[in-house]
Image (cartoon, rainbow, N blue to C red):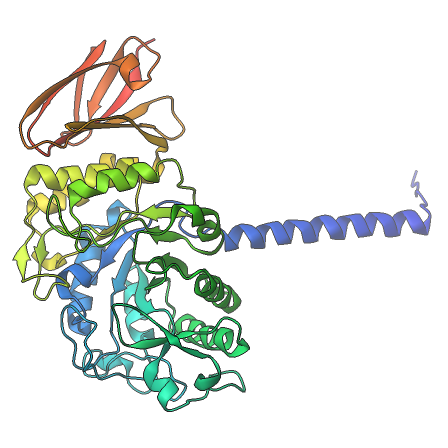
Length: 464
């Protein structure tokens, strides 16, 4: 027998309303998740600065991208980034020249120098190069400077998509202390946001996936510019990772940077030396104190950045110094990767990739070591002396731990630790040497001999 249940119209409408609210809430949660789904693990990529300074050309970029896709993409590396002053037609490796000649569009926005990036003609911009990177399964990034080109202000060019002109956005009293290309933008003027909106739309049209913004994270920290740029990128609807440079970004601004950015530099540039007596550049040994300050402050989507990896061939035109092979010893190179991974930091390779040798490739393609960078949790230093540093982390979803031991002295050291010295509760652990891919015997303590500036990285599994 057929039976029909008749419900009052008010009940039917209420049920419909609740269903729609639930559906809309689910849609909003999905949209929110998608918006915050960038850089859930530390980004891994290549940046042109250490090998080419500001001189990178299209064919050189493509050669590096091809090598990257073939040799590193299988290990999780994703981003290929054109660094500073890609819009300068007469670049010098170190950049920041007062006699630079610029390429701008009619709206006062920098565009790729045609003599260096021939595919950018006919208003194509970086779209062809981004399409090329995407065809390799990679993500494409660029470097920019905060503010507005001085040349756009001098010509009072119109701001795309608005009724404003460059002169209505500028703060001429605000310039980058080490780069003469731009004036600052006045955050109190609506035209300033309009200008950032215009460049964000341009980069989205180019299909850019990653933007490194310079002269914004320190000297001085520019919170208003960070907020305006973040808002501009979000308006485009394109997922674009926002990286802030240079360091050291201020610790007391961590909550603000988490809200508006994905990465921020924690130090000045790191180059291929152990210690520096000046602020620029900094050395590998100087970075231990910096990462310790930021321990425990990483979150999915928001990463303190220990800077690039100056490995392999730093040439033909590096951003600092003469063309050379990295001056870090093999031990120091392992220490560099080990420290960045146990911290954990974004990993951005410098140097010329087609010139990479087998040793350097072994550093960049060790899946067990890279897993520490990508999936460890609770990373923190447990011992720090003038000779040794020890970091500990949890191994993702398992009960295992990672331990990294560093000899920061110049002489060889034999180190021995009880597990309780490292804050570990079990009496016995099995060890896996991640660099040498070797299982070691179960032990009730850890003993290791390290050469000067050397390191070791283990995965520990408790014996129950």
